[in-house]
Amino acid sequence: MNTSPRKSDFVNVNGIRLHYLDWGGSGPALLFLPGLGCNAYIFDRFAPRFTDKFHVLALTRRGHGDSDYPEAGYDIDTLTEDIRQFMDALQIERAILAGHSYAGIELSHFAALHPQRTLKLVFLDAAYDRSSPECKTMMETNPMRDVQIPGMKDEYDSVQAYADFIKRTYPSLGDIWGELMDEHLRHDVRLTPEGKVVDKMSDEIGKALNDTSASYLPEDAQIRTPVLNFYAMRDNTYFVAPSYMTEEQQARMIDFFEKFQKPWNMHSIEKFRRDVPHARIVEIPHGHHYCFIKHEELVFDEMRKFLLEG
Image (cartoon, rainbow, N blue to C red; front, side):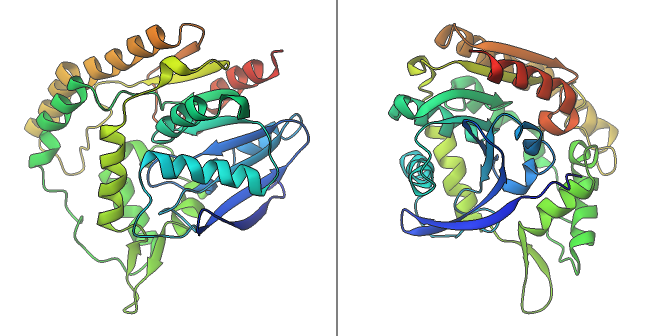
């Protein structure tokens, strides 16, 4: 767990208040953007490793963590404008943007709209074409649609009990769980008046964000800045949860991965190669979606080398 000093603060932009972390450092601004359901604290171990050469920050998007939760503003234009106004508020003229997962659409749109303010881009398992027919077919055929997850509708009396549920339900998260994830989770949940732990993000906000992702047409072909793109090449057992899945359900998940998930992943990689021929693409074998945690040294070494290039 990182113990380096960092500032936790808020900025009022675009009519709302957004939370951010600032680890300091000197040099070009390096701004980390978390994935869906994540907040700036997810980078609290990885990001400060770059402070010797960069001014390192992470921004929590609206509807997440300690930022505001307005009813509207989850379209790609507003999300990207939040980033631009955040940079303005902190007097950051140009920045390197490093985005995880969902943040890939924000990186793509920001670079298309504001190329003069984009130094470099780093996609952390984030450049996937969710508007493609392959993705639609994958979503419609996912066997998890028919699986009842035990404990999903239960109420939890403590953050620890809720964390234990997440680790049982999603083994891939359990695989990387530790102090970092505990701290991250504390900023994503709240206590009800009855003392129950619930997600801060409402179902309505989650749906709005997912609708934005599904409808966004990638603008990667417009990217002119240097790009580093990590892809986590998952094993076919990545989404299997033996704690509650029957052997038949586990087999269906593996079959689904081979027939639908993997082809969509490959489609996304090849499309990005065509659209951004100058990009450096790193495929991580036996990869984890949170590659900057599970494969920290590999991602750090590749990213540092890329960022320090002229």
